[in-house]
Every structure is written in C-alpha cells, then in structure tokens.
Amino acid sequence: MSSSSSSSSSSSEAVTRTVLGWSAAMMQSGVSPAGMHAFSAASAAAAEASLPSSLCATFSAVSGDIAEQLSDCLLGLGAQSVVVQEARAEGQPEQEKFGAEAGLWDSCQVLAHFPLEHNVDETVAAVQDILELPGLSFELEEVVDQEWVEQIKASYVPVQIAEGLYIVPEWSEPADPAALNIRLTPGVAFGTGEHPTTKLCLRYLAGQDLQGCSVCDYGTGSGVLAIAALLMGASSAVGTDTDPLAVRAAEANAGLHGH
Image (cartoon, rainbow, N blue to C red; front, side, top):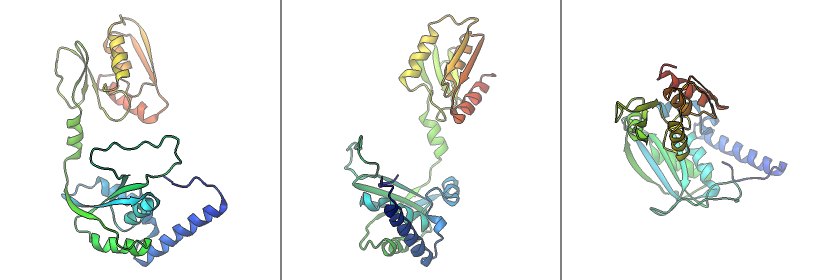
C-alpha cells in the first residue's frame, strides 16, 4: 500500500532519497537492503518453516505515516512477517475508506513475528536509530506454533445445500453417505458452498432434469456447478475461467470425481 498519490518528479526523488537513506542505515546495522522487501525469499521460507514457537512484538497506535517504514525496517532487521492493521478498540469494526485517498489508517497497529532466539530489544533499538523514533514502545509475547493446516481443515465442514445435496471437503466424511455429495478442496477458488450465489445455483440445478443435457459453467471457480451438473445426470459439462488458479482448482476437483 502507498500513502502517496503524487507522480511528480520531486516526490519521486524524495521517496528515492528516503529509501536510499534506509538502505544506508540498514547496511550500517549489518543488514542487506534486500532485506527490506516485504515478500523476500527469506520471509517466504520462514513463513513455511515449522517452529515450535515464535516471538510477537506488538506496536500499538503507530501513525499511518510511518507504519510502512516501520514494517520495512522490521523485515530488514530479521522479522519473519509483519502485519499492519487498523488500531481500534476491542470489538470496534474496521473503518472503511470508500472514496478516500489510498493509504493506511491514521492510527495503525503493527505486529512483527521473530524467531524465538531473536533479540527483539536490540532490533527495536536499531529501528529507533534508523527511523529516528525515540521511545518506540512495544509489547512482546511468545506465540506457540500450531498445526495450521489442520486448523484450517477443521474450519471447513460439509455444507448442506438442499435436501440430499451436500458440498463436502475432500478430507471429510460425508454427513449423509446416501446423499449427492460434491467433494471439493475448499479455499483455492470461489465456490465452496458458503456463498448464497453458489447455494442458489446448486438448488436451481437440483430442481432441473439434466439427463442428457450439456452444461456450460461460465466463470467456473472451483468447478462446483459443472461437477454438480455431471453428478445430476448431465451428459457433458464445460467450465471456463480467466483465472489460472481457478482452472487448476476446478481440474483438481473434477479429478476427485473421476472426470
């Protein structure tokens, strides 16, 4: 995200000088400028690593003007990941910014995750020097790692669409083995059964006589409608989508049914 919408050369030069300034300061701290990239290869590898626990440093009420700079600096100094979100009271909904200039909220909360053995105090001290932010306060807690894949799987359960019609995650047992169960790998593309449009389209199909019909699922997403049509008796079904991820997801889901 960027809080600047100006395209003038003076603005670009100012941004360039600022970035070069961060790079120089980080190099003096023994950090490569490449570490400033929020989605660096090191960050990706660290995110995939399975650690028994990690440290989470929470910086509250950070001005939106410096939240991005703080995020980049923390990543460059060893953070595995950084999340910037709106700072708001417990239970208070996030404020929409319709029609507002692109940028961060006025007040942000920055959460940075570090390896368990990382010296966060030294990192924050370096951040204060680099960004000239004396008195930068934070709260530190240890976060115990979880089996996140299993946690995500547990959040998806069979969804009843209509009488005798279910969408079932591929790893789950069907609630009713005798029902028409559409098996999917949820979460990759649109069409997991939770959205009303998916349910309504499936209920419509369930009320039609599809024996011998040819069906086109335009914007197939997960492929759920095309798969459902075949299971309901259609002689053929074609699914189309412009998203390569959706195409791969639909092909994989069709494969769960032998198509």
